Image 1 (cartoon, rainbow, N blue to C red):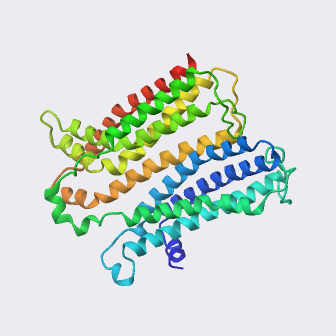
Image 2: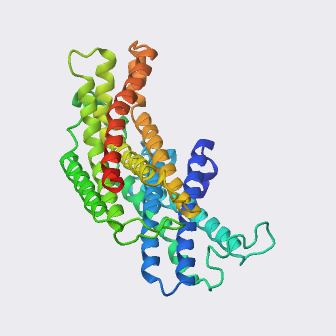
Image 3: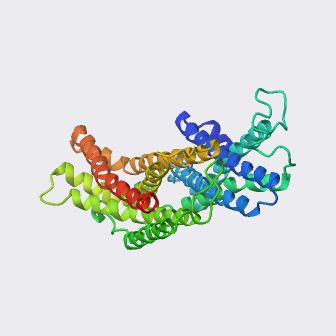
Length: 387
């Protein structure tokens, strides 16, 4: 009940973020139901159905990551003084975040079910009744228990991830501001060596599988049905590696900005990057992996007659949209975390133009570092497949 009351009284931008989470959940739920419809209509192709279901885990993971980022920036779940007295300490706020996330994602799953049944022709009275009956396996009955189980994956996963993320969130800056003014940036993230190793391992797997020819097929929803499973496994390792290496690379970018007699703007931009490397580095690494996969896919399939089906396009749009939205939401969280520092600098007479210059400098150095890295990973991934 408290979560519903807070939902009614939130800012329109916060509601918009929650609606985006619901839309992403609806897209993933629709993909999962399409996989179930394919399995019901093709009982002899159990392996292909399982592989299609595994492919759906990629947009599901992107949606869960986005839901967690939205929960972390929700003002209703932000720690504030006095909330513990009314039972909203770290545990209470994590439960509140889980409930709010569950409401949004469950709404999306229900919309996906209605839309799926409508396109199958099971629900009538609306335009486009049964418009995709053949694609969605309308000639076979849909197992209700299996459908509800698949639709529950996103709400359960997103709620648990949001609760765990907020449970581990540190105290707000107001409670330890005195200590933070002399502590400076925390130590460097420790995942950079492992991230580099996993990225190299993923590229090696892709090169090995690409050298062997077509390999075992990995049928994706839609018409893309000839991608070797090893290539996608290698890309998964690469994505995990880039996500682990992202905070470390972001930290090094902050150190690079402060090298060789930095001025006030460079010093401020570098220290902020070092301080926020853990918060924004992982989303940057994830979107770097996604963009490298898109570039590699375009290099592999862009010149040949390899049409992508509508469900493949939906999955790709979900992954791209969720990872981009996660990065923007994490940037908003970082801005909220340093609002007191920004106000203190303005009170001390720092010009607003210097703060804007520091922001532009941070964005510029991240683009200069991560854009070539994305292109290099994409080129190395596509080279063995196009040779």
